[in-house]
Amino acid sequence: MLVCRTIAEFRAARATISGSLGFVPTMGYLHEGHLALIAAARGQNAAVAASIFVNPTQFNNPDDLAAYPRDEARDLAMLQTGGVDLVFIPPAEEMYPPNFQTYVTVETLTQGLEGAARPGHFRGVATVVTKLFNIVQPTRAYFGQKDAQQVAVIRQMVRDLAQALEIVVCETLREHDGLAMSSRNARLTEVERAAAGVLYQALNGAALAFENGERNPDSLRGLMRDLIEAEPLAKIDYISAADADRLEELHQPISPETRILFSLAVWIGKTRLIDNFLLQ
Ligand code: AMP
Image (cartoon, rainbow, N blue to C red; front, side, top):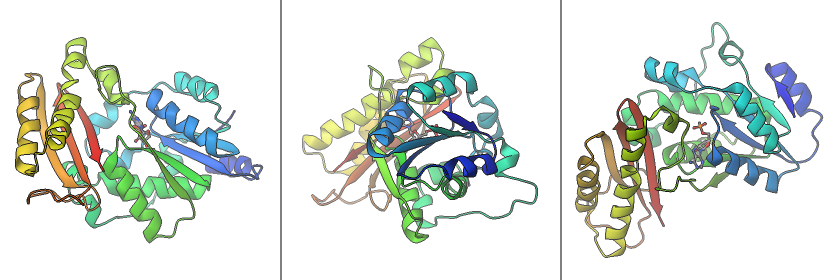
């Protein structure tokens, strides 16, 4: 496994790869969810690249950026075990040199949900992902359904800008109680960790109600809200039942052809967690 810290080093290593290249962008503090993306990339490509970069421009809250967990040595060992060939792990100045002034903005899809709760977040994501794609030049890039709006935004960006790669989306990996794996889970205390299962319970509750015929989006959001509010350590940021393609909140009774995205952002103590269920 070759570890590159500069764009020039990575480009030189990339030039030696002739077959297909799968790419998994991450912010590090890796877990099984990241490893599943790497395994998928391994299965579909001749070589695999991963990046570790805690992208400052996608953090609207400086405390969140400062508290983001990091462990480079552990991450590199996990990437090596996962069979990654090339790692790109640049310092912030390599990605954002002085006088950096070009950003990518995806307009409508970024208005709601995470985009509304975290102004500027998706501008940072779209910009860094575009720059990573330009550096890595992957055949395919792998993203988790855990970040549902990010997947929609990146697909839109790739289509709109004719970026020459395929986007592959992998299902969300979960802990035994259903909690979606996340680097941020490491910040939870033991009691908070126990409380965090409520996100999954709320999504599951809404999905079950839908399966049992509930078609009123207000009732489905209300059901999730009641389940989260019953957990004293949880504080709701948003709860959504949206059209999965447009990411707009549903208000009319849900029609059979609608693909629904149930999603939520919930504070457990000082940690903000997100999760979603996609109902096809
Ligand atoms: P992050 O390091 O959190 O930016 O995540 C890097 C990639 O891993 C993103 O495409 C995430 O959607 C994906 N990912 C994060 N958590 C999970 C999970 N629990 N299951 C599947 N993919 C995930």
